[in-house]
Image (cartoon, rainbow, N blue to C red; front, side):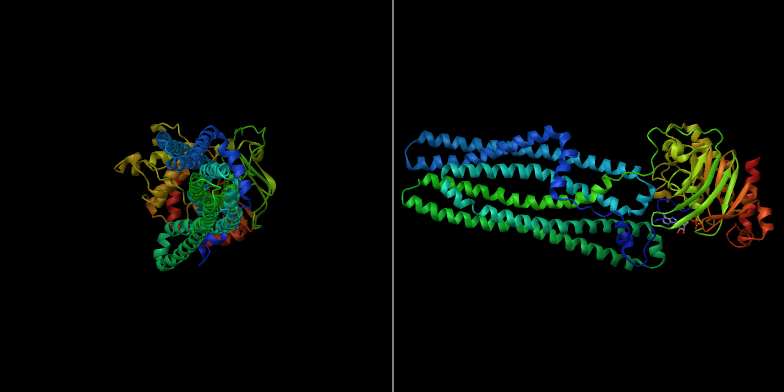
Length: 623
Ligand code: ATP
């Protein structure tokens, strides 16, 4: 049986490494900046409102201290012209106090927001992972893992940056600009009006640039997802790449994606960085106007030199926060682009669920029954068309049939990796859709052709799903799976790490560890896809021995490739195009002279060497 998580991820020939096709399975949703901000504030910022409030209060203090500076400058300038030395000293002390308050306030605000940012990114990542783990297998399989990875690596961090930036920079800079504008109006409202004429222009340009940045960022993030996808595919398939001498193809494929990511990043950077100079230039025009009109007012005696000095310093002080505000807008748009990519993950609801009042499955015999089961994959591929199978307690039913007939699909329906589109599946008389998912999955063990091992110790791999197993139980399982001897011979024994996906072990060894895992789980029902991979006879014998032991006393549904398994099955179902077209024992089916007879003469059913090994294994296991 193909690995259920990988079976829907065929590598598209010669293009995009699945990136183009598979990533579209999870498109970004269309959300406005306002929606993103309000959702983020509601769901992620609210729990940290105290820290955020302190940060905002600190920002307000910073803004107030900045707003006081022009007034101090006015006082200083007016007193240089006058003679009050005490006043000058007081103003100097005031300047030190204002800058000290600014520095401390900025530190508090930034530290708090950085903390909130990290906590938010952690929450988003945990929620996303939990959603993915609980999501339907069909949905997870349809989406390229690169898309998920980029969600964790890039998108979540972009969202964090935009939240921190929104609260800190937007809050602080906006308050500072407001305080300085207040100071300007206090000093001279006419000049303040002249100086403020630039603000609508700044707002307009910043808005435009923000939207452009968002588009470029969206494409950049999609590109980053594609990049994660192509790199992880090339690494997973490195053997095939080398065997087919395709290093250069992969290098240029990945190079194209990298170029795309680079180009879109540059576009976003260009738009983002245009905001500051444009705002700067417009501010320059405002300052020039104030110098001219303010200067004329001083010359004509309408304004003191202190008023003009204070006013100009307020304008110059507003220059930086105004530029930052412009930048903030574009950064927020970047965050919105990232959020539109992670919301679909955060919002996914599994459709394969148990009803609210579901009871745990009560396994008495472990009998399995398929009643008129039809199934088609979500892309419309019909896979099963009226399957009826009855497997009484402890019996073995072997599924045989040509490739693509629907055998794996039948197996996948028992633990509800998918739900039938019609018909039902019963375990001990209970519909699998009516019982809790965890009790259902505890009732069966799945052993696939190419078992998956985690990059952990052998002990942890065997005990996966049985965390309370004792060392003795783990060893007994390994012995029964004919794995103990080779494990004991390894330098670190059960503590040996197996490498990514178990690459440090041979195919046969991996299979025996997976069998030990199923032994330890000790479920009443066994769903088994026999390996077709050519193991050498000794290894084959060991795997077959282990499998025969595993099958003993369990209700087994097996996709059979070995004559020995088939011979010992209580019933063989021949599957073709989603239907069971023949059923019976080996002899009955051979005599029938139909598809089974044809298959048993061809390579679909095990070669003689393996058959001998398997027969021997069954004999050993039966002893
Ligand atoms: P094999 O012996 O080669 O593993 P099989 O008998 O197990 O084949 P299935 O894997 O059950 O066959 O596939 C049955 C049909 O469903 C095939 O036509 C296959 O292309 C299709 N199919 C399998 N998985 C999916 C999927 N996730 N999405 C869409 N179609 C699928």
